[in-house]
Amino acid sequence: MTASNIFRRDATNVGDWHCAPVRYFSLPAGEADILDSEKLTLAPHVVVGGGGLIAKTFHPHMERLAARRAEARTLVAWGIGESENVDRSGGFVQPYDGDFPAYLDAFDLVGVRDFGTRHRWVPCVSCMSDIFDAEYPVNTEICVYEHKRIPLPIGDFPRLTNAGDDLGAVVRFLGSAEIVITNSYHGAYWATLLGRRVVVIPAMSKVYRFAHPPVICRLESWKKFVDLAQSYPAALDECRNANRQFFKDVAALQSARS
Image: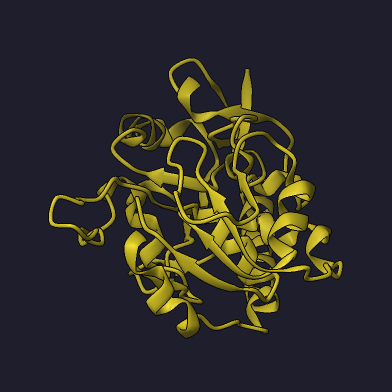
């Protein structure tokens, strides 16, 4: 298997499935799952990402790819981000406070979806899908979008999980409400791109570094915080522009080293 775009290629998780830059930009073809890092043949130009690949689960695979840097002409990280479990023992989650791993220094270009780090901000490339250009009628005040393995026991609201690969169904659902309550990274991200107000009940560190921050609160406190949630009308354009510029830099690098 020759790999050009390596990511968590998981069709049972809609966010993982739609975070590959090769789906939206003219890049060398060749999708591969990062979990297969030991047996992959690297293409001349390799893009790693997107997704929450800065995590203990993926460290061995990312380190392996960094160690194989000499096998490719270019090695780029695109829209990756942290994704660690957080400590809820004290009744509230704590954000990840570590620096990003040193293996990123082996990459020619690094773009991370987390805002405010030492690396360039390049949000999840799924923003490039033209599905976000449509208008979605609001027919309910609140909906709940939950991680398939972490249910959110919040009232009798319309709800959906991140299981499967149907981005259209998810975006239509998120667009149907004025306010989205979620514990899913991509649920918060996509709802923001749609101009919806977002409340996050955090289960992992990745929700703390959005460029367009949602309200973050404990499960039992969401009613107190929901009115603080705001929309970000410019979010879609800002996220797309960051990805377009990064693509230009990636394309220039690949052309120079071809």
